[in-house]
Length: 335
Ligand SMILES: [Zn+2]
Image (cartoon, rainbow, N blue to C red; front, side, top):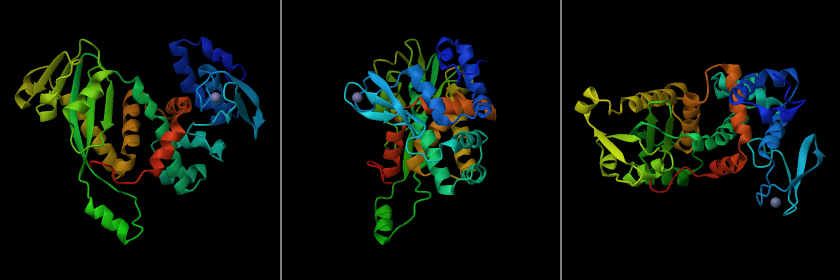
């Protein structure tokens, strides 16, 4: 593999296999060449083209370095920005530690272990985890379903884990509006595509299912749902063939929801045994982590570090998502 930091334009000509090889070797190459995550973001900006965060124009010129980071200026609106603007690295002071942090995360370490190894505080460890997970949300756009698509509703307990009860009024507000369940649509097909989506509702409704599948399902797919009301009543134009399965049908036929049930069991186990539950506020982030583990990662630390970094570095809306998440209150409308 060529040294991409010396000759980044090499990336443009890579085949699909070459690209995968690049991500899988990325960690080792960055260590060898003493590069950090922001250096890699600069390379990503070259391949996707730097875009102005304000007006989205691609009419952008390089405008010198600032503290070693590439600056840009938009020729359309005049906005000056850095390669990190809008990304998960925006405002991170110790950028040199992020690659090692991602490696710890790939190794499945706890927040505390990550903090100890990378030499950051536990609070920073928590924030960095969510910066990265927020940047992985855009992976959702890459998930499509083919063939037999299995759907199920997953209800999780509403959780305010980790929230400090600041005063009596806060506690009162929480008890008064005490939410109970959070609904998630879980979907898989038989070729390993998987997506879970948290809804701002306590049950899955027919409309949610219709919206969820609209742009993700191929024309000749068969949608299998359990015999819950939402699945029975969904009747969208884009669903050409629908099968409702009950226990008897599941035993005998190919139209079943057993694959999605397995994934749900894995997910719930992962959330409760590995993290001892997560706050509902952060559930979407953990869901995408689970989806990426199942669909994109290979359970090898070095390879997964490169893959996670690549995914996170591609997202120029991550900071916005992260900021919104952190400023969210715990109580969600409808729940
Ligand atoms: Zn602009």
